[in-house]
Image (cartoon, rainbow, N blue to C red; front, side, top):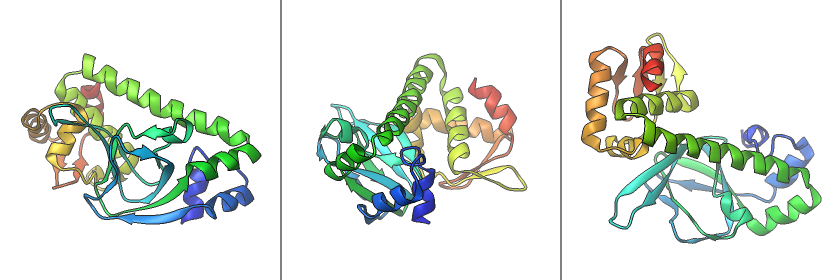
Length: 225
């Protein structure tokens, strides 16, 4: 399982199986319970994490204590990669939203590995660019999209990464509370709940606790535009 996940991570997919094995030997595995914090915003960061299973949310707290949920990451994705190029305080707090297994790689070990495998640096820059593009898209949505549109887009994004097809549609076990979903789209819980209730009444989705089934993906896509 671990080797196949490493081979599918953009940072490492261009490496040979021998190089992947060499890198895997440097990594330590860790497990988080739901709600357990991997690292806090402002802490010094010295390692990168790769998700093997579960989900981790990345949040940023404002001066008045409000939290903005920047991303939800799942298996095969990387957490904390910015500190590998710019060691320093973490820019977000990473918290498990489900039982999660991760691999950890220290900054010094990866830098030494890159020196002997320079092609890896190009793959890392590509992965960072992809993360930046997603962030820019999210910022644009906050400016140009209304709340129902942002909710629809968030549900579709979660479905693309965590969903599985069923007879009814696409089942998405996102593992987020209503408050966390509201933080993800940058709106109040009441406003997001109103949007979800509207989607339910129109027959587009079915709510199932910390999961949702998308019943009409086409209409959600049109609403997300």
